[in-house]
Amino acid sequence: MKKMTFLLPLLALGSAAQASDIRGGLGNFDALNHSGGIVYGIEIELDDAHSKDVVGTYPGNHYGYGKVREDLTDPAHPKTFVRYDGGAFTNPYPAGSTVSCYNLALNVGCEHFGVHFAYSANSTTPPYSAVKYNWLVKDSSGKLVVGPALQLNTPVFDYTPPTANFPAQVVATIPAPVVPQHVVKEFGEPSWVKVIKTTTHRARALALGDLISDDHDGDGHADWTNGEPDEVESEWYLLQSHNGASNAKSELRGSADHMGNNSEEAVTRRFEFYAYAGPAASIDGEKGEAMCDAVASDNLHGSGVVDVTDANGDSYPFDCSTAVIVGAYQGAQMTEFLAISPLAMADALQNGKVNELFPERPTVNGGNTPYVANVSVGALPNGLTIAQDTGLLSGVPSKVGIFNFTVSANDHDNTTASKAFTVKVTGPGDTDGDSDIDMLDLNTIKAKYGQVVATGNPADLNGDLRVTIADYRKAATLCTLPQCALVTPAP
Image (cartoon, rainbow, N blue to C red; front, side, top):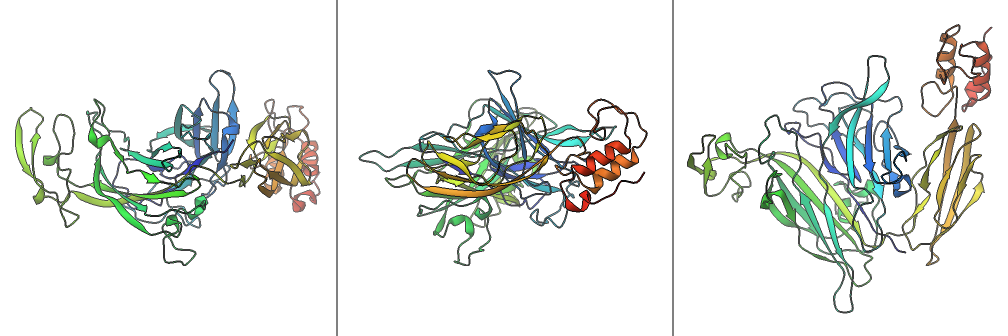
């Protein structure tokens, strides 16, 4: 069965004047830390989804690839969690800042995250019923816990397969951002969107890292265009979430893109977001609806005279041409839709722990299933296996170590692909949870000599509920870094 996918990267936001934390899609998005304090990662909850549905996670942040786990407490409604953590942190986003979020040498209060799925053939219905996003914070004891929620919006794609008389088509619809408000009204916070799309398409998939505005390949086109000419599809459209009946401002539905008879073309779009800068006098006092929804030729002021209702229910005329209604640039989201995903290998696999269930994860995706997948070089971690027809890796690791192996696969169309992976397996002794047993862990164990600890404490390797030199020596034998293994424990 051939699979489809779409990728949803987002460039760094240009202004923190907006109230929202995120603009982007689940595939890849920028998150601005407006929580008021330091955060230590993010957790994404996918309801009614399995870990095998997650093809990959985006690593362009201070935390690296996301770690996936599956909760089958209610088998009828599984939950999958993608957690970005591991010793890093994110500062608060500075008010009014316009710095780029892409320089990982700096901690500027925003990060990139993302979860990538492959959809079933001829369907854009996501393999989850709901998604929740929360920052990770530390409680009073220093334990990492789920903290404030984040909000984001994502495009929806309607795909029509090709027929004998008509080519395949795809239509992109961008909904209004849902932004928390201090005063709940019928309409949410307004914002402008400008849509730019490629006028022709090519049968080449773009990687997540290529869906950006830079021109790294020097072809004279921004990388997101896939080397194709582009044009403005929608100059200015006012988006505003609506809590009541359906309203025209609640979403922008694009025009249909013809994808060819073989449905193998990649369709790319860029959504640019700008703040609504109209004064309070241009906003309905009862419902919160922004009434100036047309932009003049100067791309700043409004156009026309509108009737506005105040908080008392009285109506008055407002001349939109007297007001600047297009505000600061807030971000640009680039999307890619592929009706048929090419055969590809996973970017990376997460690490595991001894005697802890390794979530079922795909090593191969796209193409035309079933696959024939196997380990062609090296060996899997003890206790893990790969299903040959699906390429899914699963099991319970039984041995500590660093395991290097290559997975090779071919699909029903005899397309081939391969990828080398590294999976670290740790266990007791990994005191900081970074999937390595190293000098930091040994020093932590040494600092706890003589302490009585609870069951399961990673510094208590022999399980006697007390940290001693015996635990240190055991950890030294399990080191995943050579420099650590050479350490001679002090008496």
